Length: 143
Image 1 (cartoon, rainbow, N blue to C red):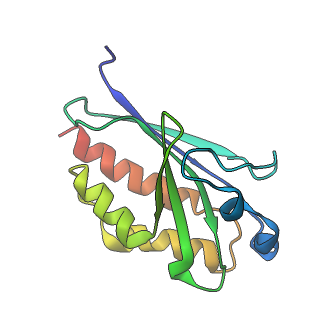
Image 2: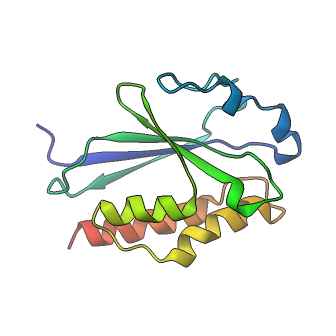
């Protein structure tokens, strides 16, 4: 049995100008992975080792993408479990609740910055913002 669980965070680098041409939502069903092209696949994977006391199944956070680049609240995430089932799309408020349910306190502003990075003229995922959030979670996990 592993000493530490791993939270895998993967996200896509998507050209928001062509976001309407990316059929992630249409191709997505409740029990299969979205069908993506190599360009759409996650460019970066961050693995965060968490305290083994935290009791939740290892899951994969995939396909961070913009449904509508003009609406911040349309930024969506999708959790994919190891058995390839989707737990549904979540917005930033739901993401905060999930993080809190995991036993961590992450500043609301930090999560909100992810959406701002995505829609504020920067077409790449706000990698440094996500890393900051992960570092904050990791600090709390090590307490």
